[in-house]
Length: 157
Image: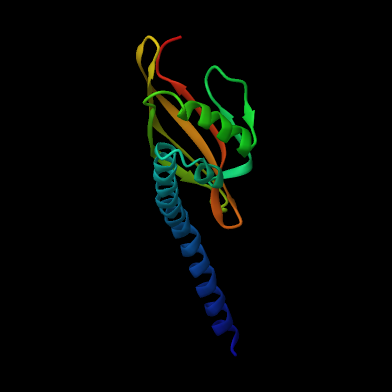
C-alpha cells in the first residue's frame, strides 16, 4: 500500500476518533440525565410506597448521607434506616427532581442537583421545607448508584 494511502487512512481514523470524542460528551451527559431522572423517579415512588429495599438497591454500599442537623451517615444500611425513620413521620411527603445532571467523560461518575420538598404533620401542625440537593452517582457493575447525598433547606439560619 502506498505511503499516502496509509497517511490518509491514519488521518481518517484520527478524525473519526476526534469526532467521537467531541460527540460522546453530550451523548454521555444526555444518557446519564435520562438514567438518573428515571432513578430519581424510582426513588420517590419507592419512598412513597415505603419500599426501602428498592431505595437501598439504588445506593452504593458505602453511600454517604449529609443531612441538615445530623452527623454524616455512612453506609447504605444506615442511610436507609434514616429514611425509614423519616418515612414513619405522619403524612410525610418527599419530592425532588434534578435541574442539572453532569457526567464525567469517563462515564463512571455523575452528579445531579435540584430542588426538593419535605413535608409532614408535626405535633405543632404541618411542617414543610423547601431546599436544594446534590447527589453524586457512580457506576458500579454498569449501574448508577448513589455515592453521596447532601441537602439543605432554603431557610435562613
